Length: 354
Ligand SMILES: NC(=O)C1=CN([C@@H]2O[C@H](COP(=O)(O)OP(=O)(O)OC[C@H]3O[C@@H](n4cnc5c(N)ncnc54)[C@H](O)[C@@H]3O)[C@@H](O)[C@H]2O)C=CC1
Ligand SMILES: O=C(CO)COP(=O)(O)O
Image 1 (cartoon, rainbow, N blue to C red):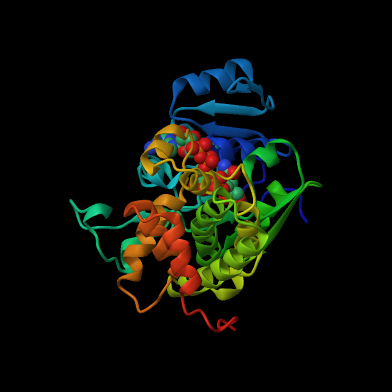
Image 2: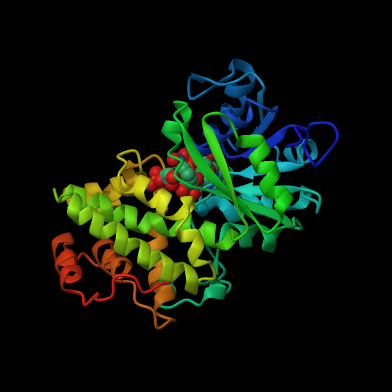
């Protein structure tokens, strides 16, 4: 593979928007090959990176520089990795939009959903939602900017493990082959494998939907249940992801790949997963509000459960794990009752999706 970028003869820095846990891990991996310019909204983070070459007190490569200015990032970089949690994604995308041109490429790493609701409406008021009212992050980018070549990054990528240099793999998905090739060129290393997939929506949805099942897996662990129960949850969770992903516009095949079943197994087994941790703490008796207030980072699955529950109301589809988790999270149903309901649910066909 050509070691030069398809974007420009001269290698420009690569932009990383957001240096939370995942953004920092990706910026550090990119810095092994190219110069990196990161955007952070807090001046003290930018100051720390530029003056000390550290982030939260930990050393980072010298070729990572930082700015608080979207305009500077867009001027200096042709390719930007958007690594913002879904709650801030629309706002940040809008702040970049005036400086983006059709030659820019954006690859995002966000495993959440945004909403496209009429003026003045919010999720609390929406009992049911149509697909057109739900946006994946690639849809946000396409809606808010003139950028055409959009991609996403999803897979079993617990950032703590990536920062430790442990082996892992991811999927770069895009309708545009050059976006996939560029993602592979920039991220692939002896420790990091990068697969390509042209079903971007399916890959995005896989990363989004597995968070629901990861919360449920944490709850099972918190209840002290064993590996048989987890095997049941993961396999039924995968079936639920397949049907939901398909209804939302993704391909079944993507759920069966690294971004689907791969990430599902990882997050359902990792104490480093925020979503798993939410479920675990709920099962130990804490309430959701306490957990959210106490967590520094976002567990995307909580909001995803609400959005998917409202989406289900506009379809004939049943998603028993999601529906029961909604009752646990937002209607005060005890986890043990939800589990009993699932044990009695008339699942009968093992494989009904091929
Ligand atoms: N941490 C992980 O292991 C992985 C996380 N992800 C996904 O990546 C996304 C980000 O996750 P983390 O980095 O872990 O979260 P985080 O909470 O550590 O970082 C989120 C970043 O978004 C920025 N941000 C949020 N709202 C903003 C706003 N309105 N304006 C400007 N900046 C804003 C924050 O400042 C921060 O830099 C999530 O969707 C998550 O599901 C994906 C794979 C692995
Ligand atoms: O998606 C992840 C790893 O692939 C991270 O999961 P959490 O958001 O649950 O920490």
